[in-house]
Every structure is written in C-alpha cells, then in structure tokens.
Image (cartoon, rainbow, N blue to C red; front, side):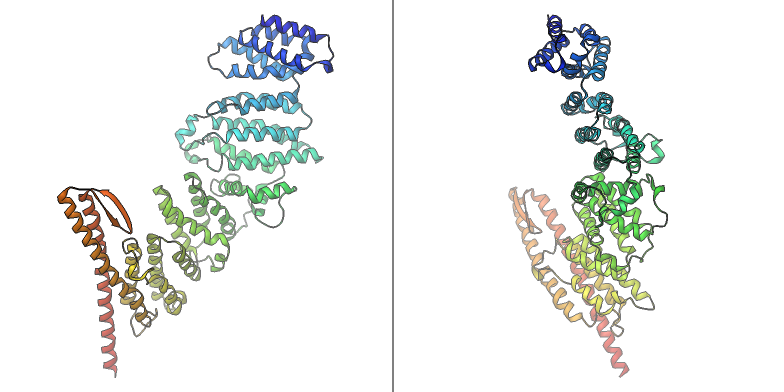
Length: 594
C-alpha cells in the first residue's frame, strides 16, 4: 500500500515543473516514503530513488527521507542486508538532494541524540555533511554552522580522564575528535590554496579560527594526556591538539604570534567580533594553548629560541591564573604543571620584586593558597604547597618580603600563616649567617613584618585552637630570635621591640590560654557526667558546636584540645625563660664592663 501511494505521488509530480511542486506534495511524499521504510519496502524505495525519471522529485523532496533512514542506520538491531540497503539509499539522497535542505536536515539529526548516541550520530553523519557543504557556494556560513553544531554536541560528552578511560572511549569522544579533524582538513586546505584572499575566504578563515579556539577550550582544556613514554603515538587528544595548532598556523594565525599578542592593547583580530570574544571567552582557550605548547611540547619547535625564562614566566602567569580559578581537578593540575615548568627555568632569588606589581604575580600565589586550603584532592593540595615554596624561592629578598606581607594579610588560614612564618624564619636565619645583613629580614623592615606575626587577631579572646598552627609557628620564631640574636647586637631589632611584643602577644596569650583551658576543663567535667548518665549532648570546639557526639568521643576531642594548649603553654614558658636568661646575662655583662 505504501509503495503504491509513493508511486502515485511521484507519477503526479513527474508531469509538473519543479517550481509547480506544492507544499501538499512534499508532505504526502514524506509520509508515503516514511511508510515504505517502516513497512520494510526498502528495495522498492531504492529503485524509485535510482530511477532517472525521478531525479528532479528526489532533488526537491528526498531530503525529507534522510531522517527516517538515518534513524534506521543508528538502530543496531537491523539485519546486515537491510543496513546495506539503507546505506545505499542514504548515499543516493546525499548525492541527489538539494544541498541547502540537506545541510539543515543533517544538522538537526546531529542535534537530536543524547548520551552515547551523540558520537554514533556524529561518526555516521560527518562524511555526508562534508560532501554536502562542499557543494554549497556560501561555504563559510555553512562550515561555521556545522562546526558550531558539532562542537555544541561534543561538549556534552564527558572527557575521559584516565589511560583506561581513554582506551575504552565509552562515549566515543576520542573517535569523534579524530573524525572531526578529517572533516575539517579539506576546508583548511581550501583556505591555503586560495591565494586571492577574497571576502568569502576571509570569512571561512574566521569560522575555522573560532572552531580552533572552541576546541582548545573543549575538550582540550580538561583533557588528560598520556605519558609520551606510554602513548606510543596513540594519544587521541595529543593528535587532536597537534592538528588544531597546525590548523591555526595554516590559516594564517601562527600560535607564537597569537599567544604573545594575547592580552595586549593592540588588536589581534581583523574583526571586532573576535576582539570582543577574546576579552570575554578566550582566556580558557589561550591558557589551554600555552599548556599544550610549554608543558606538552606540542609544536614548541616553532617558538623563537631567544625568549628569556623570565619573559616566558611573565607571559604564562596570566594563563596559570586562569587555570587556578577553575575547580576541575585536571584543569587545576595543568595550571600547577605550567607554573612548575615556568619556574624551573629560573634561578633562585632572581625574580625581582618589581614583578609583583603585575597583578598575576600576586593572584597566582593567592590562587595556590585557595587550592591548598579548599581543594578536596590531597595530591593537588600538596602540589600547590610545593609550587608556592618554589615560587617563594625564585623571588629576590624584597619580593619574598612583599609576598609574605600579602599572604599574611589575605590567607585567613592558620596553617598557611604558619607556613609563611616558617619561611620568614628561614630568611632571617640566612640573613644572620651572611657577613652583610639583608635589610629586609633584619632591623626596622623585619620589625614591621613581625608586627603581623607576633600578635593575636582578637587579643585574649582569639580562638587559640583554631589559630594553634599560627601561634606555635610564631612562638618558635620568637624562640629562635631570642636564641640567635644577642641583646647587645640586636641585629633583628627584637630587643628594642620586646616590650611591645610582650604586651601585644605574650600577655594576651597567657590570658587566652587560661580562659581556654578553664573552658575545656569545664566541658570535660560535663562530658564525664554525661558519660555516667549515658546521654548524648553537644559541645563547643573551636567556636563551633558539635552536636550529639558520644561521650567517649567528646572526651577524646576535649583532651586533644587541652594537649594543644599545654603544648603552646610549654613553648611560651620556654620563650619567656630564654628572654629572662638573655636579659639577665646582658645586664651582668654590662655591669662587668662598667
């Protein structure tokens, strides 16, 4: 019945001119053709499409059958003989139908699926889509529309993370990336071969450029790369990245020129649209490009060899800042790798303090602190700590001093502040061992820095448990200064400021310890009483209430807090004892001299 209906419609249309086809004819043709497919009359449908007499009809109306045929091809349960006929029908429709209508129809089919079917659809339709676009005159618009649609769908697929996931390629992203390169290559070659630089060719260049930047952001920003020793030339993302960077150079945008111009006031692109896009959206893409070149070494041989390590660090810091602002593990990891790669090229103590006047040179260490304190992944926290130490090592003395002040004022984390205080101690130690003192870590400059270290943020009411790391580091620094710097020498300026340190730090700490110990001893008493009655109750630790904790656990927490206070108290007592001994010894020496 369906075949007869289709043949009847075709017979009626054969006597009409192309411009006389009515909207009703298109609808009837689509319904009858779809019925033929549903009822399995594919051989008859193939004969009708192959018939030369129906060429004009198929050209105008056949694109309506592409959707049903493609959906059948995507069904895995079709017999091989049936699939072969479907492929023949599909190939003929691509060859005979109006390319404008086919383009829109194919792009709609690419947009339809979700999940694992996305890659299946793309892999099936890329070659036909390429054939259709090559028939069109307005190629730039068509390729732009196609690449945008393809990228939007690919961006929905999860990016495989591990070596096993890349090899399994469950969602087909790796296959699609490779196929997308083959799809794009003829259009890149067309740009290269066209020496006239016509307006249409320039537009095609722009569309390809947009696609390259989108690809640098997704999937390449989050994609993991296999170790070169184990990839054996089979890393799909390395291949994809290499080809994308190659496309950039081929269409007249060599990556060295692009990455070194990024962020400058001079316009990089010929079109205002690109200039706006660069400021708003391309930061991720440019950061991704920098990582691919400097860390993965892709096309690095194209870079000038005369670039200094300091210049490369300055260039990369903005990109590192972009990486560290993200939350994805793989992206943060890339930022840390790029920072390490850039810093290892530089000698210790050679990064001048003036570089800290550049915004990214302060925001990057602050970004490292955020990763150290907020990231849930231990390996990244440890790596960030190591990178912050490496960064500190590269700065000159004034740069270290400036960064220490900045981080002490902004980190708001006791552990980070303790880390900075330990670094201050190390710098003082090196300074005292030199024949010529470092003015930034002795005398008035050091005293100014110690004002940020040897104090309690809220006086005696400071939460000592929450600030215990910082307080212990501060006491250890003070103990070191008392031991190493004699009152008569007073190289650090400590002995001049001892009265202020006692008033602002030591005395409030004594009061705070007494208050804290009294509070926790009372809490222990309450917990012991609750243990006898076997009730659940809440306690306050570090200013926060911990509800419904079993009494045994409560006691462990409370005794741990008391142990911390005892530890602080013992170090405090030792510091005060050393101060008393040193002061007494100096007084006796002075009396002896008189």
